[in-house]
Length: 544
Image (tube, rainbow, N blue to C red):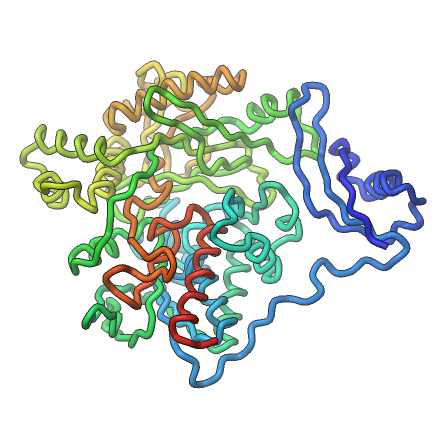
């Protein structure tokens, strides 16, 4: 007999198998000896009470019967026939990888072209980036096998079921080596230290089934005839015939956006959010959220989610990383971009989060116009093209993003040293005399962030931080540090597609996909988008 129950336990009880078994027995009305096993279906933390933090669990109990496996059988990926139709997938991030796995299930042969390197080779380039401040434009935190998520955390939380099955995505991650906890935790997280092995296992499955994953194959051109891509061409001169092209290049592939624009393939400017990354000692966040001096060892490092409306603009936390590290995420020399990640144990002494402001298109366009008016000799040719355009240019948001990142590089002084200030100093327009210890390895430079951030962004952030300090007593402190700039929250460009066929309106076999096309916001939503488009391609090619 099986019974699904909901129980609430103290953290130490939930962490103890005997205590948990006793609680299950009490809840089901059976003796403990009759409980032959259980699965945790859901688990969340309730820290609203100042007296006690609780763990809420949904349990599937097996009473007087042997427990079944969580999944009766894994998802099977069969070997493809020799004559399987090929699909070109540009990018080996979550959208591309999950699209490839779905292609195999649909009887299509995926050929992934990835501009970067495999996860192992990529790690060496990240070490150089962190230690020496040297950016490899093709191998960094954004580009390479697994995409931006591989070495920047692996959060698997999404609010949307509209794009597909979240459970299926989590199940596949679990099947390829993720911990079982991702199947039931309220905010599942794999960890940067574990993701590379999982991504490698996915790639090996794609290859074993007959697909291909090719590295250092940067897309540089299309051959288009009568509204159809006939071939894709890479930087090294390789040419691949195309039945269908699934474009999953991620939110930072600026050269792809530029290529599409140059070939008169329709793209659109898209609003996104930009700001800073704020880092506190983890013990401060623990004490605020858990109402304690020292965190219970059975509780994970605390996180937070904050949002505030400041005038006409929203400011909100983004990609919060408890027990995490701030990382350099630039994709080209001469720019500073910061991101955050956590290892699986989230056991670093700092907690960091993006704190960002929503940027609308007219405001960004007017800001760029003002910059060019103030500096008529500006060397940025894209900026000049955008300002001269009669209508809002499709790359205007990209240029805005790039401008702020370049200003951050100038303020930092070079070699990926990031401009920073203590939190209260930032909010009161002071340059910090000293900076606290921080997790950002390339180093920090005390700077006036007014020279980096547009005035409306800085003012909104300042007001937002003050409001957050009222919501979380102890959050507004000079023990925290603000680091610029957090600017890769989402793509600054949308590549349009039909709502039903998912094809580009001009190019019938081009399928814009994932974050880079403006249709996803994180690993899970990008993976679901990849699966959905692979199914659409199979239907178009009449495979099944």
